[in-house]
Image 1 (cartoon, protein in one colour):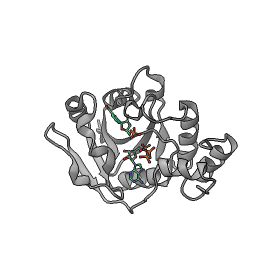
Image 2 (cartoon, helix red, strand yellow):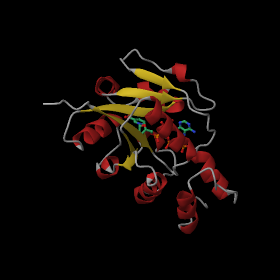
Image 3 (cartoon, protein in one colour):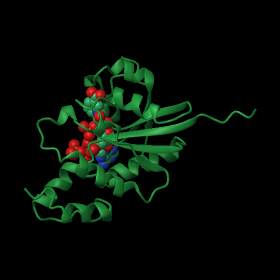
Image 4 (spheres, helix red, strand yellow):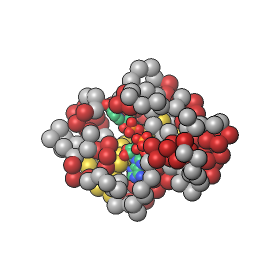
Length: 200
Ligand SMILES: Nc1ncnc2c1ncn2[C@@H]1O[C@H](COP(=O)(O)OP(=O)(O)OP(=O)(O)O)[C@@H](O)[C@H]1O
Ligand SMILES: O=C(O)c1ccc[n+]([C@@H]2O[C@H](COP(=O)([O-])O)[C@@H](O)[C@H]2O)c1
């Protein structure tokens, strides 16, 4: 019997409030450089480290994430973090995404340099680091070398064309009446406009 190679799956968790071109370039570059068979975008349910911020409701973030990735056959969206009650922890994300496959898969958590620098604050981080390898991407203003690997994080650093866009900046631009066109996919721009997101 011919053994099929184990599929390599990128897991890209984010609040995606809204998803922007930085996310898409990061996912695409990670997929290309690490020969991923699929990238699963996983919008957070309850991003516990953003409790001080007003986060848009999950249904709207999910709709925007779906429309942002729909034209790329390599990308899909998982609702596992939104469906799970309680704070969103990556260690649960990884277990749930793994359970979405019938076969053995290798999971890679895609992460930007800013999040990587905070990895030591994540829930059950040692367990997470055993379950998954990280693909870390550069982000303007953040050094990737800040990562603490003392708890066993396996990190592959990937260079992507720097995209100096954040969801915070997109929200602020809408509040200020400035355009976000070309910073986010067209469908996301239309969703934000039609649903009056981020105006106040
Ligand atoms: N421009 C970017 N370049 C590289 N990585 C990015 C970029 N924007 C976000 N990421 C990474 O994508 C993941 C999800 O990010 P998130 O959805 O929180 O977007 P964000 O732009 O950082 O949002 P906010 O400004 O609201 O904090 C994180 O790992 C983050 O580091
Ligand atoms: O596991 C944790 O404790 C943890 C703490 C902060 C962030 N994360 C994950 O990091 C990803 C990006 O999160 P955020 O809040 O920067 O959008 C997302 O998948 C989160 O679930 C995970």
